[in-house]
Image: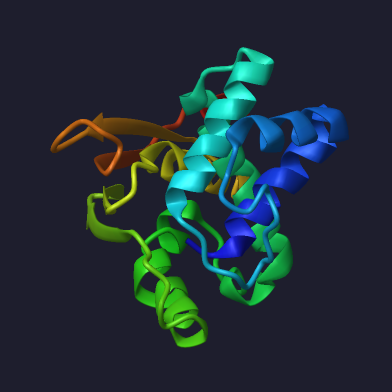
Length: 189
C-alpha cells in the first residue's frame, strides 16, 4: 500500500484529535517501522489496519467509522493534491466511474507496483452501481470516498452499500441513486 495513505492517516489524526493521540495510536499499533512512513514508500496494508485498531482503542470510535471518516478525508486531500482529475466534471455520477478508467490508470503509470482495488461501474437510468473488489478489507474506506464525492458535488444522491462475497470488506456494491428530496449534506452524514 502506498505511503501517502499512511501519512494522510497520521496527518488527519494530528489535525482532528491532536499530536498526543497520533503518537499513542502509533505506539499502540506496534508497527514494523514504528510509524515512520514516507508518502512514496510502499508498506504492508496490515500496518494501516493496526494503526486504525490502535486509534479505535484510544478513542472508543468503531474501526469502521474511523476508516469511513478517513475515506472522506482522503477525498478532500485528493481533490486538493490532484485537481486535474476533477477538471470538467460536474457530478458524482460522472466522476466515480473515472476512478477505474482514468485515475487508477494514471496512478499505475506513476506507481507500477501499486495494488489498487477495482471498481466495476454500471449505469442504468441515472443510477450508478459500483462493485468494489480488493485483496484488502477497505470497503469502508471506499464508502467514505464515495460519500465525500457525493457531498463535494452537492447532489441529492442516496448511497446504499451491499456487502458481497465473504462479507469481510473486500467485496461490496455501492448503489448511487439520484433523489429529489434529500439534501446532499444529509446523504454524506
